[in-house]
Length: 387
Image (cartoon, rainbow, N blue to C red; front, side):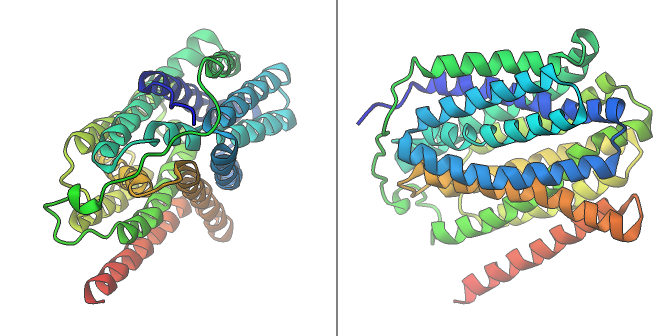
């Protein structure tokens, strides 16, 4: 069996991947608005297709990594993303842009499950939380800077930088993986959960995994509905692209800070009260972000939204990996569930807008779905306590 690459090199590739993907995806939406006349409805449709491709590709990417090796899957992913960026840069027409975007989405899904698997591989449960915590802080922090700096980069470097900058990053990433050992990766056995959470009276990993695997896609429904509608929010508030990047990056940074707290303090592990409060905070903050035209309220809602999405994502990834012997497969499942949320929120918003003809339909449709999801989670909790 081959050794796992050193953690620092894993986090370096993870961080550069997060920065480049946050820059391209979020500011492509502004480019489509300005160059091709996309509004909320078109951006929501694009988000729905993105999520559909993400869901199937992440599931496949995790299994390919488990079979061929995590590093080999990363090489395929980074090379495919670089090729997609080159295609989009060379041909600015809308049809080719959609082809490049689809290719980028599919091959990106070969990277995230396997980066997660490499960060977790060979770690016993008492060390896994630390690895997952660092992993989350790295990708969230670099995504935050990608969003914050993206508006300025487009303004100063031109729209071509949406392609040549990620192209350069992904090409270098692909080259870097050839410095890593490839092939099967050693998976260490895990100690019992009781040894990890002695202060918890009854630890039920499978039960909490089920809760998190449902809540995290619902969280991503809110996240990606918000993201694809930011260009419309920008227009409504009269903000420039750099100003929008500055304002709407706040929840990214709050999420990063929350990841750091959740990493350093493990008292939330397998505690339903923390999970429930995080989910309730998600519902309220999302509703405010979607309908408010008050910048102070947007700032406050972003702080709450960042904390809620961090807790639900960390729960999903930690509960997926804790007790797992096949990190590639479970990383793929985790990312595939993220894909359900990425596509589900925009898809429901498109349907609600089409049926109602109301521009506020995405807000009430997704908020209502989040409420139904919360009721389902509470029912599962009640059944588990009475079983």
